[in-house]
Image 1 (cartoon, protein in one colour):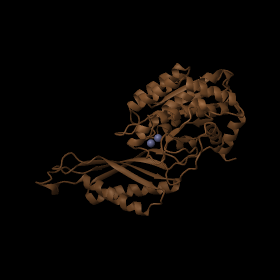
Image 2: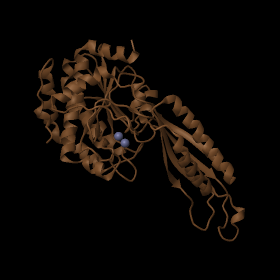
Image 3: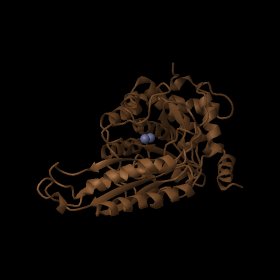
Image 4: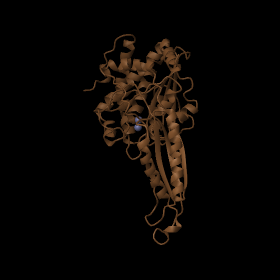
Length: 402
Ligand SMILES: [Zn+2]
Ligand SMILES: [Zn+2]
């Protein structure tokens, strides 16, 4: 049985404001959940989240934010800013929202709940703006599943001056702390020569052979990889007809590691495997790396506040499971400023992420309640950062390691 957003048992400093935040989220229940369900029903993959970005931008604009959309170079990035009523000479707190889906699967990572909870948090903090000093910065961040959209937003200066980056991610278990694998996308293209596959196959150079060889050598390589390292891929183009020797094949891969130095070694080895497959088949091989995401530098100072706020809803925290790690461009943000990436369960433990089961869970009544609670938790944590300059200072101290 999940608590509802109105059920928080707040005490301690700011208990009254935390209660008001919960009430404001409850007041906007229909608007927040409608956004979650609309995005869920109309999934758009990385860099193509046009509808979702528009809805998100309209929602924060309705609640008083000055909105840039597009923001920076990405068509589907959004930034909304709202100054505090007491002046802007205070912290800048970022509330982040993802909304990309998985090709062929839909919202199997539940980013619809992240878009909705981010907007919900932005709505609640906006209502407190007259009492705040500093600036609330809402960031609609595209392309988390592929391409690391947040890195483009960092490069475009959209996170300049931020003192904290907050979001929530749905999961099959609750864990406020976050560890991430460094990850990079690799697109591999092999070019060969077409020929009739029966009449004169010896005239061809088979680009599919090169891709098959690459998969085989990756499979063998995996035996020698460190346990936390990952490499996995799919075929995008494998030829056009069985009676044509394929002259062009394309595969998409990801390589991941917990260790940035080892990650560099993996990248070099991967390139060597592509070259070897090309050499063996007399094809040309090209590996294009892009969309790198970093390991996570999780900010415990801010996370502890989030965990305390979760506790007011009777939501217990759990330790990170080091053998079940993913990757996220939130890692890139965490290398630049104090960042948290807490996960809250929207379904029973054991439901696999990136599955149809998890996709269906992301629009369930339980996910809806968690989305609202997460909106309140992010807003409450943001409020604490605005209200306590010493907390922001402590978060930066931890970040800098001093
Ligand atoms: Zn995700
Ligand atoms: Zn995902």
